[in-house]
Amino acid sequence: MSTPSDAALPLILLGAGGHAKVLLALAQADRRCVIGVCDPQLAQDGQKQWRGIPVLGGDDAVYDHSPAQIGLINGVGQLVGNSSRARLYLALRQRGYHFPALVHPTAWVADDVKLSDGVQVMAGVRIQPDSTIGENSIINTQASVDHDCRIAEHVHVAPGATLCGGVHVGAGAFIGAGAVVIQSLTVGANAVVGAGMTLTRCLAAGNIQIGAASRLKTT
Ligand SMILES: CC(C)(COP(=O)(O)OP(=O)(O)OC[C@H]1O[C@@H](n2cnc3c(N)ncnc32)[C@H](O)[C@@H]1OP(=O)(O)O)[C@@H](O)C(=O)NCCC(=O)NCCS
Image 1: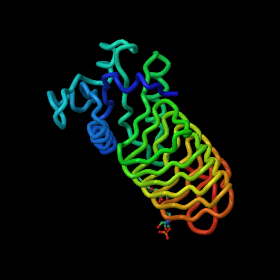
Image 2: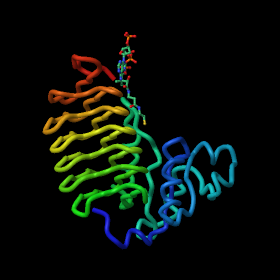
Image 3: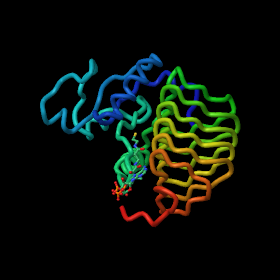
């Protein structure tokens, strides 16, 4: 879990794509100190600055800083079938680095909600009491997570999705933009709820829901 002292840690952003851009804006809105960005492409292009912060180098530039001195922001996004975000997080955690949970100042998170390391809560999100969010999960712009939800690690709840009360989401699952999951259902590990879907039955691990029927995911 993140601790209050996390708020004082200088942060390094990993990646410089669309998701990273949103996280930099979040960190700045929350008045966090971001000392630079590590991104192989920016480093290769010889770029010195990115969106007003220094380019520190490629991925390896992180190792110039000890895990005790800095916190990391995982700027790699998570689309369906892409595991690079989880791999980056796990590799750096294994080397002792820490990813403080980040919450946009316009999000509302009930006091007793448990946010694990690396959780990212974007602008306009609502998370209601007794919910828990697992490591490295994204609760994206204007998503709503109601009471007693259990969200495991490496989950992406995409923009505008709604989880009603008591929903359980397994590790690595993806809840598409604007999807609705009705109360007390379980979405299995690595399952995908398509954008705009309303899920009215539990979805088995590794399955994808588009339209009325679910099928086994192939990617
Ligand atoms: C569910 C999803 C992963 C399916 O991807 P896929 O398996 O590659 O499916 P395809 O794109 O090949 O589409 C297969 C068919 O399903 C339809 N389809 C795909 N996603 C759909 C959706 N969310 N709702 C309704 N129909 C959908 C396609 O139009 C296509 O129909 P067709 O065969 O009649 O042409 C994807 O469409 C989706 O919803 N992704 C989530 C996007 C999102 O939330 N992004 C947020 C980023 S922050």
